[in-house]
Length: 226
Image (cartoon, rainbow, N blue to C red):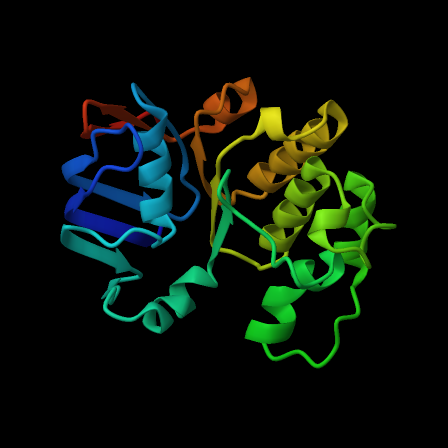
C-alpha cells in the first residue's frame, strides 16, 4: 500500500480573484499519485494548488503531512514542508537581487547549508536543456520571461521534492522551452514521482493520472481513476 503523504480534512479556503473559494473538502495524496485538476474557475483551481503548497491559510480544517498537522501560525514552521514541495505556478518568482544561477541554487545553498554555489552535472544538464547556461550570471530583469520561467522549473526540480505541483504556463514560455518542460515532465513521471497538475491538457498527464480533482462552484470532488 502506497504511503500517504498528504491528508486534508474539513478544509475551507477564502476565495481569491473571481473564484468561489473552496468549502469543506477532503483530499488525500499518496506516493505515486498523479492528479490533474479541472474546474469552472481558474482562480479556484489555482487556489487548490496554492493550498497544497501551504501558501494559503485555511479558514478551517487540518492539513496533515506524513501524519503531522501543519502549523500555519508561523511561516517558519511551514518551511520543512515547503522544502519537500516543488511548486511551479504562474505566481512563482525569482529573487530580483540575485542572479539566475544563484536563484536556481537557492534551496541547496541557503536552505540545505551547502558551502558552494557550484552546479553539479544534473543542474548543468537542465540549464542546457532550456538553453539558459549562458544566462546564469544575469539578473531576472535582464532575461526573457520564458527564461525566468525555465529557471523556476529547474530550481524546483533540483530540490528533490516529494511532490511536484505544476501549473502549465504555455502562454508564458516559448514553444521550445515549453516542449523542454513537457519532456522533463514525462521523464519525472516515468520515475513514479508524485505530482499534481492544474489545467493540463497534455494527453500524457491524463493517461498517467490516478485521480482527478473537479472543482465546480467552490465544491471539490476527488475522483479515483485507477
